[in-house]
Image (tube, rainbow, N blue to C red; front, side, top):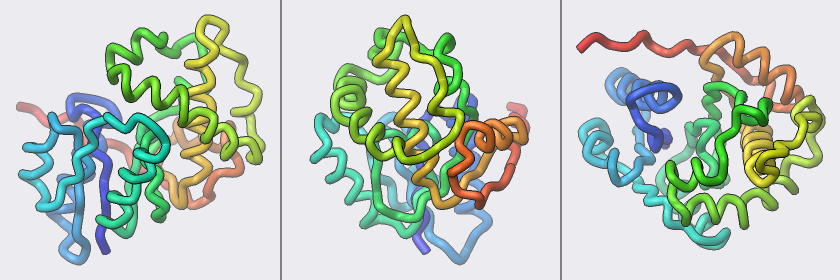
Amino acid sequence: MRVVIDVTRSASSGIGRYSWDLLRHMCSSDTKNTYVALSTPEGYAHASSLVENVIVDDGLSTDLEQIHDFSRRVRESGDVFVATNFSTQVFPLLPIVRVIHDVIYATNPQWQPTVGDLLTRHGETRINTLLRDMVPFAREGAEPFPGAWRDVPQNERSPVVGDLFKYLYSFHIHAANKIICISHTTFEEVDRFYPAASKDRVVIYPNPPRSE
């Protein structure tokens, strides 16, 4: 089986470190399956040192058609997609294992970044595409599912950012075939806010930081 693992987040901390550690561990210990890295251009050299096949996400998809074209590339490269709760621009139509670090941004509007913060972190092209194309798509996909996520108050400071986190997170969590939570706290939050999500859920804590 070909397993695509999203390592587009920085390996320095959080869910990025978790997904890079997962890729490193699985491709060194699992001899039955083949592993593929979904990486940013900046992470390409690191990913290539671990696996032979690397898909580069340059973040330049500017509309839904290009997003679906990129998603087809992912689908053609793998049989399973291991995504994080930040994998927001890929719809590969594969069985999806969703690794959830936390749902803080989706459930606490007061902690959400501003549009300016998002533009600085991820670039104008990616954020504008998310706001213009992805949020309406995700909202339609998430609407049928019940749960406390629907009752999260609006982000009065930036409603568009509130919609981005509320609907994109909710859509992707509900679309997952299996969910990995990095702590029991996250497991309980998923159960509370997304009761209709896959019941195939496990808790796998991250490895402790390695000493240099």
